[in-house]
Length: 379
Image 1 (cartoon, rainbow, N blue to C red):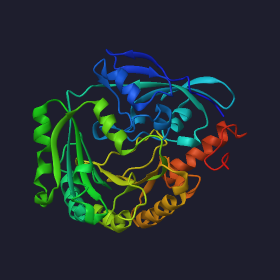
Image 2 (cartoon, rainbow, N blue to C red):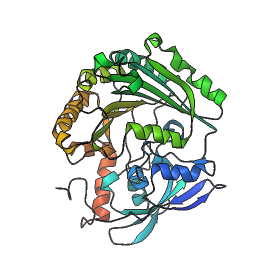
Image 3 (tube, rainbow, N blue to C red):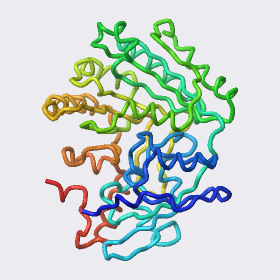
Image 4 (cartoon, helix red, strand yellow):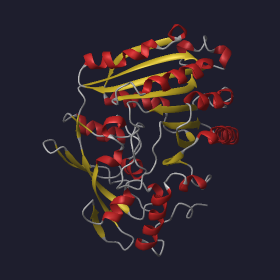
């Protein structure tokens, strides 16, 4: 066991060069706090307490990913300790194999990252979010419509569709559907509030907008508020089962397949979510990174509960949800999947060529298995 707890600091921020050096155990919320204070930002993850290294080593599904790309796309270099105990810096020009693997190998990385060198971005001048709640039985119609308009929306809109428990003010209206609801969110990272309002306006044109139970349009946010909102959806100190998938299937088919099952979820904090990439192009994985996945949608079931005595019921529910989603899966996200329970997910998180290279690099640089691979060391 290697304890990195105290490696939790920002080493430097260079506003003029748009660069920072940070240690691995700083959280998504903390790094944005430091950067935002200097009108800078970075494609961090959505869950506030998640630490940078766990986020980046898996690839980094990010805020504003349509414009900024995944988290690893902004990693310029990684300082790390090799299996031989040597401290090296890996980037595109030196120790490139380590650099390639550190950008997506996840728990199979054969080194200890101690510092990340990041490229930064100007803090967006206007961040805002629109949200719409619909009766959960309308999720198929909503999904079909979102799929049709996603390509027409600008890439700086982060569009998501949820199945989740209704907020308290809508619980009575959703009583017939086990207190569950369908929610659409659209978060934009823009240059002005005028751009925000223009870009988010199409969300008001849903063909079943008259069935909308509640909506909030173009509400201003900052990263602190975004983390508060996402933290409420993915609460800390819960027991979890998560398998994040990529899909190119019809979005309505995906949600219709799990709708009835979701209504039987044993925990009120469990949810199913898919992010829908906007704009004409799907974000492609970087060629110089182990991270491999690319599809129209990313998400899946986040099964979350609080008591150990509820483990069996929630685990069984989660397993059935995965079975229902399996026909629509194009691949998995190594950073948010249980590869111990489902070892097949490991290889299905990579393209064939990148998986082959990753295995070859592990044998080359860690032939004695100093670092556990994906399948051993647990049990």
